[in-house]
Image 1 (cartoon, chains in turn blue, green):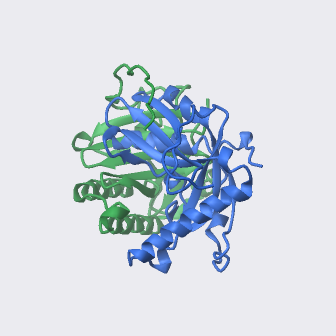
Image 2 (tube, each protein chain N blue to C red):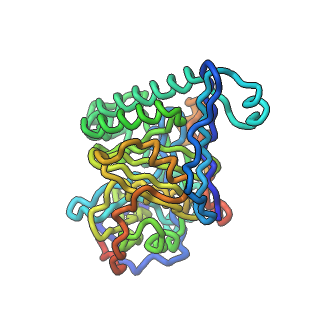
Image 3 (spheres, rainbow over the protein chains, first blue to last red):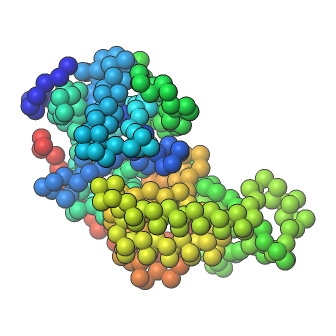
Length: 196
Length: 197
């Protein structure tokens, strides 16, 4: 399930199930899972009105096992890169903990959110990255470059459309006790949880 | 309408108890507004009345609260010393955040959790049962936000140098009447489609 180059495909359906993989310590504050750090939004390099983050599409990860394999690969790649850059520390070892699920239509409906009046677009795009064909880019765009308070509001709303989690311990991480996956919190939108 | 009851708290010190702050005269509680349940009680001695009438409210000592704020201060200092790529906060942000934390501690406001979007801000967060209160602190602006799982309930922005007390901002939101309006009251721009990146 790997390829190179961008994938030309039609719009992602509203009902598409997307996954956000959770990695420690990025999404943690000390030993506490920090929902506010789950979505790590970055500014588009050429457009400061646009914020981006990454998800994965069920279409290319049709089983929960494949969803978790994606997360394990992601954490392993980060650790390998840190080792290659000679900045790896066991304390900051990247550990995949599981995933949360979001629906594409929930992301698109963010533009109707009271308190995010300056948000003019929110959508998801199929865009291979790092050899992962299931990679999805979540992009939101504001009328003006979002201020810091607006980023807080966006992070809050993104967390509140998550359901799950599906916890997981990767092979090679079973020496970690307690495993940080134990700290994951229920997604606020769990009434619609449909992870297989 | 969901209500936010974030973190009721009693702080016990020594001497006679005193309940602060009283609700301002003439301010009507808006039934459609958020009720942030921060009960700040500054006490100077353990009181039978308090023990009896507020037995369900968590009680911590002032020394414990001050220790929590010391932890906040240490965390802020650590965030200012991170590597660039790990989100080191800018010195002016650190200064404002330390001042805000000092004001909150002075008024016995519960100690927050902390996170950051990067170098330009620090976010103080209080949460309970899915409801959240955020205070986003930039070098020149403070933004307070109350949310429930269903929606953003209220947001108020302030210029940092014009705000006398961040604690006053947070407690004023409790009564549904922000003490100043957000600049984000302009008409919303028309939605557009994002092109394929």
